[in-house]
Image (cartoon, rainbow, N blue to C red; front, side):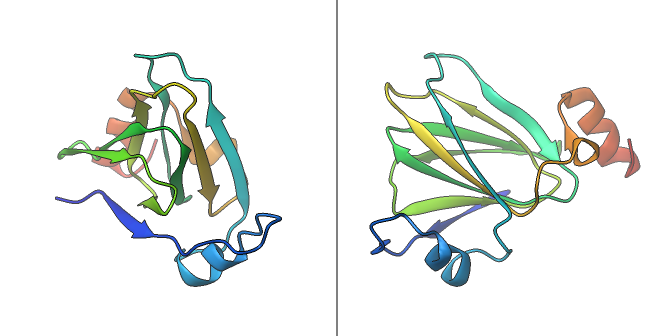
Amino acid sequence: MALGKKIKIPKIEDYRGNLSVIEKDVLPFKLKRVYYLYDVPAGAMRGGHAHIEQKEFLVALSGSFEVVLNNIEGTQTVLLNRPFEGLLIENGIWRELKNFSSGAVCLVIASDVFEEEDYIRDFELYKQYVINGKL
């Protein structure tokens, strides 16, 4: 069961780092927010959460890390270590990042601006949401 999907990214020719080529040719959503995760200590988990509506696209800009996806029916672990592919995570999937290498940087492209009501931080609440369809 695939919970996330790896997608190839075309080379970004714009020296300014304009992400419109990714938005136009790769993402199945309109880019609304971009941020980075970096300097995660070895062995630490980072980013355990799920979004009710928001989709995410993760890219390893440098180094490597694993993405653990969970929908309570099963889990999938995906290694990201190349800047020419990213991982599409649909809404409603719990995700955690782990095993960051030294100097690893994760680019997160999101389909929506951050909204507290859309964000589930507690795995027990997430399981309740999946089972009942509401928090």
